[in-house]
Image 1 (cartoon, helix red, strand yellow):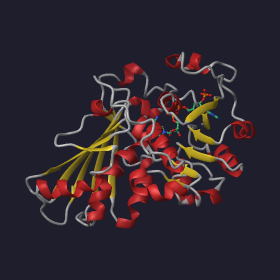
Image 2: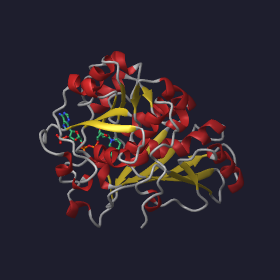
Image 3: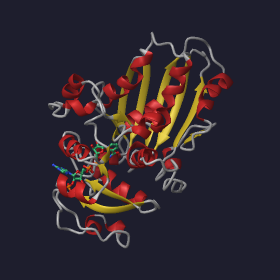
Image 4: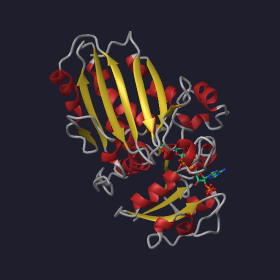
Length: 341
Ligand SMILES: NC(=O)c1ccc[n+]([C@@H]2O[C@H](COP(=O)([O-])OP(=O)(O)OC[C@H]3O[C@@H](n4cnc5c(N)ncnc54)[C@H](OP(=O)(O)O)[C@@H]3O)[C@@H](O)[C@H]2O)c1
């Protein structure tokens, strides 16, 4: 059994890691950390885990974590993960970092978008961007995975095959509209995420300035494509629905567009749909549902994806990365169907 630690186990992604890893046959969770609740039973902070975990939360101590665990998921906030992750890598451990601290390869971009100095620049070169469908070969050899952000996952997976196909008109901007459930903002309540403020509403935020813009741009830089990205807060717990307006070089029929997506036909976690995806159909699962639609003019396609931000957009993708890093069957522990209704 692989001895695993979760740093930041009381947050939403830490909790989701606990839920999913409870069904993983090759993993034993040996350590869970929290700053505010050290000394408290994890199942007290996360009552849904009663009967599944008798672990007590500890303050994060890199030496202690490294002593007990061989593989660590860091579910800490950005800027807070940088140092702990570096300590663990230096101790020879394998780490999947769910924060943004090792996602941007450009130090200038990180410091501009996250308003903080990057203190572990050398380690950035070691980090592999953990989008398994695109980078599985690099992931297999990596010791540090920068797990992608939730919006970038929902946008990049549908974008890649089209950009690779050469059919996208990169002189025009790709417009990406993405609606996220409130758990995307983390567990600590704020004015903007408090129930009465969110319920019955639908509001864009960080318009033109969201931190996931440079991450998406970095990953499609090789295609020289430009994006406009607007995120919205959707009054549901989980899920991201992404609508992409894709400029094409030529008129394309529905069949031609669908053929581009066949590249994913052997990917278990990508489901090609013939109707618009619904976030409800991926809840609790590691699936990314994708559909493409031709428009009457033919020079713009509409591509839509649905993911669960806490699973394919965070904890599920992190476990998928672990499976690849460990040389296990990629799907281990992740094959349960979505929750319905
Ligand atoms: N939520 C999503 O959908 C999503 C998706 C993809 C990626 N991510 C990323 O994943 C990371 C975790 O997100 P989340 O939504 O799970 O956040 P969260 O709910 O706010 O949880 C953050 C965790 O970090 C711990 N923590 C807070 N301050 C700390 C510090 N100074 N030192 C050590 N631990 C500290 C918290 O523990 P205590 O409060 O108990 O001390 C908690 O366990 C973030 O970097 C986020 O950007 C989130």
